[in-house]
Image (cartoon, rainbow, N blue to C red; front, side, top):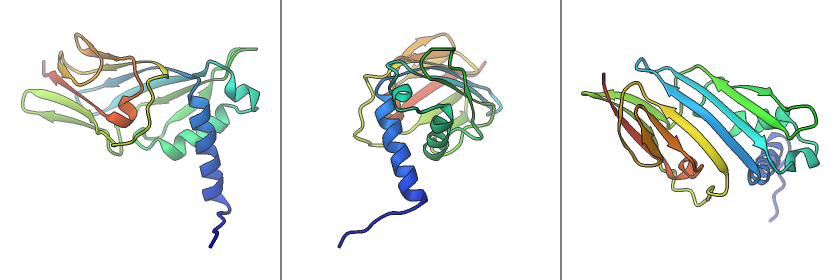
Length: 172
């Protein structure tokens, strides 16, 4: 028996496929600034560095639809087109809301802890050119990925998206 999907599920599947193909040539930079009160200021920039999106006439609006459908840990993301004239498609995602979904920021006795769990996904994102700086409200004492610099962890691989990351910072 053959089933045919119609409407929204088919559209979402198509968008996801395009996004995953596009991300293979994507450059990702950004900051995640975690506050002691649980707020998070997130700024991520996605640049189509090899012009894959441009070649198939995709824009930041297409990126926004796919991002909102697939990335659940950023509440109310604002996606804006910051593509320079004649340049590669470049989209900026921002949010000033607490984290959502499986991503957690907690306060424990004497420490703050940020956890994005291992999704046990077989996807491998090490080819993505990535630089994401996670800032904690206190000095970082342990991180499962990235390089620690004071209250920051600099992550240069997107593999944390499927393999998880944990960061612990001391209060004060």
